[in-house]
Image 1: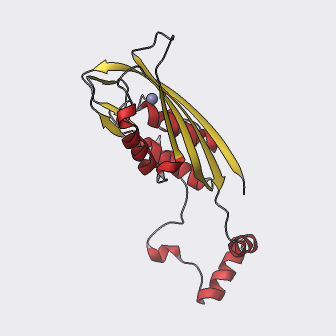
Image 2: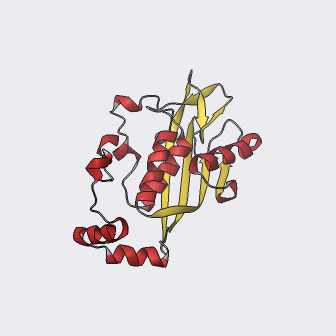
Image 3: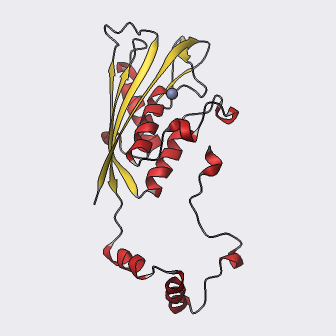
Length: 205
Ligand SMILES: [Zn+2]
């Protein structure tokens, strides 16, 4: 088994007239976070931590702010893409830890809901999600929200038998041979009306 760590940081300024969304949770407050998307500073930091852990770039390379498709987009879309990337790389989340830095609103009363929301979006237990809130003491940044995130991943190891089959079926001819022996015929994906599976993420950027 192999392990990887990732780290992400993000910041957004507060802005009147937009809803405040943090960790996928809509929070009662008189200001929201300015951004091309919904400005969810916590999900953006977690997305970058996940992408960084598998060296898959960053949130800007997948979702450039210049693309009008991501205007006011829910940041859960960004997170879902990062989760796909770590799955394609063969990893899953062990745990994540985060720090939210903001003067207002107070996170204490909603910390349980926030943790549950992030855990749901990551499809992990709330026990594996840390969210700590700090005020930006001495930084003169009371009108900004910042988030730091670290994530630990572990490889999804195939069972010993499956690993052996993958190693044995290295060439196309060998795969054909294996399939033939299993079902008595050649592979014919065209008959199923679909192409061979691929991991083309070009359409995401
Ligand atoms: Zn952001």
